[in-house]
Length: 467
Image (cartoon, one colour):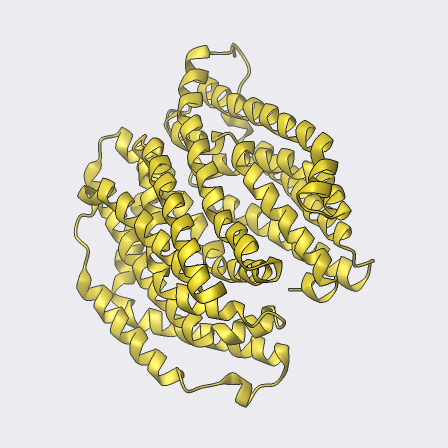
């Protein structure tokens, strides 16, 4: 939001294009090692096997450093070619050089963050992630209001925040968990490496397809409609990712829980947790859909006042949001069941569906067509992933879902005629208005689900006592 108001549109779209390109390479950067750690570490941590913990983390870090080095070297030498022939902007080459730092820093942090996640230390995991976002916000604000607001300075701030984030995370790991590691008698185990690598390769493939799936919409918009429409779509992506910033840490927390329970053959508890999270995320999706439909235009005005057309994409894709929420849970269970290859196959099929639907709907309805293409893709992925896991859905309580659907519907009807622009002026006042609306949605959620909080609390403590 700050960047769009302090740099030219041309520089901003170059920055966005470079970020998109970096995110495609990011799928290869980790080499699937973070998910491998999430799968193998919980068992070693539970047994407090220091040698296995040290060995597993060492294998992951060395593999990640090698993969990061290969990407960094290639990117360093081809950045000029990419800037001239792909981005058609010399500035892109400088940005690519700056983002080389990101590949190394992100890998180290993800391994440390996965360690916290495997220990179910959610406080430490969320604290370090919050610190990263805080450092980036402070850095962006300093560049915008005190230093020279250039797009390269924003890139340095982004990567500098990630680097500081890694240093602080390493200190937390050493300070709190150094007793979990030992190098006495440590030796390289080819058998352990082979086991971790085999799991990681399928995770990397699925991550690569997933990254392509996110990017295919934008690239087809560039080809069929133009770069300005691609910029509008990128703003939409920023908006639709807002709920995932808060939900995904909880989703990723499910993976080590599922893995540990399945290794204990405790299928019943897996079913209970899977069903509970399905109910919870389905209800949360109802609230987010209502918010985006009825207050999305105000949200766009506050965050991106020059890109109001992105609200139309948000409006038409919001009803499909529930399927995106649910498929995130399915992917965690598929990984825990040692089925990342199933996830890869599902995403490959979805990629082709997305290409076909984008081609059809973009020609029919322009930029708004991307909303329907994305929505159909989410439904397709959820249908296939749920088909693999339907035996784990213990008992979905439709009565709770329908109660929330009716409650959200009535609340939405009461607010649909309220236009904040009629009595609020300026982005700051509108921001306070949006925060008030979010507070009201929270009150409605609590009232409708008050009887469920005891069940949530009980199940949460059962997770915490898995060790």
